[in-house]
Length: 108
Image 1 (tube, one colour):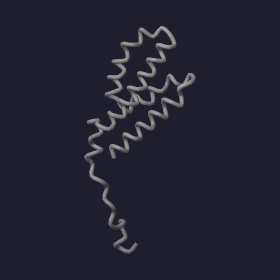
Image 2: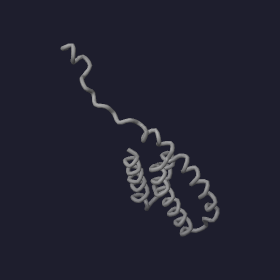
Image 3: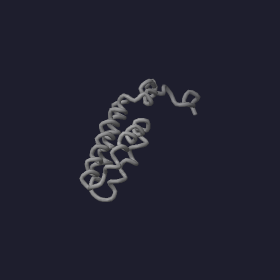
């Protein structure tokens, strides 16, 4: 199950980040990834906040955006693979198959 969640996050983050690389919609990509990796995304934003005041040109914003994208995609994928808050999914027993339907024994 954790590998499935990791793959789903990686696919979602690549789908959100790269197809929207051109145009006005690109500035919205963090909104779709931030809540999925909440504790880590808060740390990522705190680290990247130090780089924002230096964004005075288009090329510096592009470098910042690539750096943020790398943190969200690579860091988020690693976080979903090893995250303690997803431990409950790893520890859940697999569902058991039902042996009979309710009411089947009574002949209804």
